[in-house]
Length: 258
Image 1 (cartoon, rainbow, N blue to C red):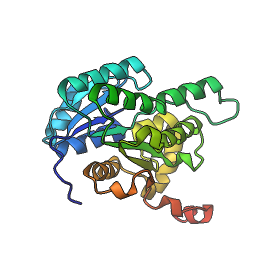
Image 2 (cartoon, rainbow, N blue to C red):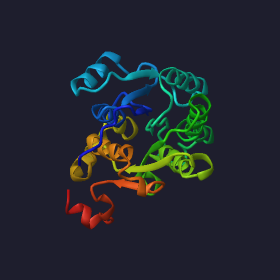
Image 3 (cartoon, helix red, strand yellow):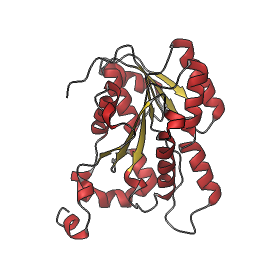
Image 4 (cartoon, rainbow, N blue to C red):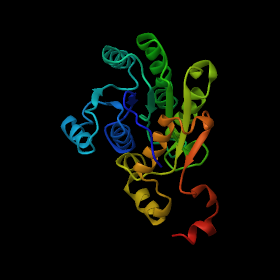
C-alpha cells in the first residue's frame, strides 16, 4: 500500500516508547509526521528511541514522561504540544495500565476502578485538554483495543474491562463527534507487554500458533491507513487485525494448525 505524505501532521502516541506504540510512532515518523511519544517513569531510553527514528529518516520525536492516569501529567503534556503546534492531527490511544486477573478471588473492585480510570477514562481527559489548550479535539483518534473485548483470555480480565469501556467512550458521539475515530481490535502480538500480562508459559503455548500472531509493523500499517484517511468510511467500527484467527472457532480446527 502506498501512503500519502504526512509531513505537517502532528501525532501523539501514548505508551509510545516500546512495542506496538514505538513501531507505530516510527511508521508515522517515517512518513513525515511530527511524533510525540509518552511513557511512564523509567520506561524509555531517549537516545535509543531518537536513534531508531534517525535510522528510518524520520523527524526526531518528542519523548515525554506522562502517566495516562495522571490529570496533571496530561495537562502538562498538552501544554508542551500547544507551545509548538496549533493542533493535533492524530491521537493513538495505545497505553494501557491494568492488573492481572484470572480468578474470582483475584478480582478487586478497587483495582477495576483504577484500571478503568487510567486505561479508559484517560481518553476523556486527553480530549478535554486538547480542546482547552489546542482549541479542538484531535482530528483523528485511533483507539488500540483488543479481541479481549469479545473473547476470553486467562488473566486478561482487567484489560478486557478497560478496552470495553474505552471502546464505548471512543464511540460516544457526545464525546468524540469532532473527531474521526477508529477502533483496532488486535489479536495477540508477541511483544514484551504480552509477556508481562500473560507470562512466559502462555507465550510458549501461543508460539505453537505463530500463524495467528500479529506483528507490530502490521498494526502500524493499519494505523497509517487511519491517519491517511483511507479508512474514514469504517470509523467507529472495530477493525479486526488477527490473520483470520476469528475463523478458527473450535478446538478441532485449531488442533490441526498446531
